[in-house]
Image (cartoon, rainbow, N blue to C red):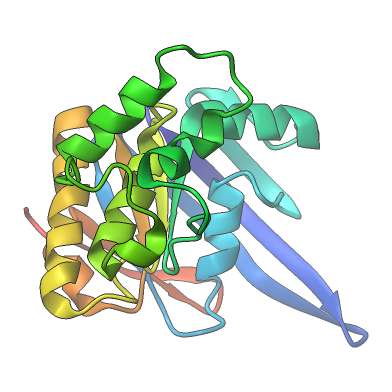
Length: 227
């Protein structure tokens, strides 16, 4: 079963009395354990598609099926609940809370849950990502690559089936970017998590299973990378 499947997605915005088609009929699906990059110039619809995949926005037309459930018409509360249960997010600028330690930042998505094992799970995720000696460090005591590892651990705290990454290597030097992309590939392979990375960075395409190119709100060239 696909993790998420979109059919004929259309997203329109009205601005200045005009109608803009940010997405113009997108069919996109991803399987468990698959690592996919989405590329395209600014304004091609990448962020809009990512927001719809993450249940942060709804399409004007079309259908979104998440883990076998049609989620297109769900209200905000139900989308929020399903998003917390199923989807993890990693952002270019990390968005770590500066007053919290690495462990506390990883726990943030589940702080409202009554989960006595949460701290232990957060610690194990950080240790798995090579941060066993940074558990009690705050963001200003971490390098860019270490911050991104904390952000990846945070995205996994809910055991998601889908992780969405927005420019995951964009704020990193190339060597650190490769290390982070290795982590994503390992997560996809070992945990069977589907990962979608929206990026301008060609380096990402060395690690993904396939690359989807968006052009003017439609899918253009698509290639399998054979890794």
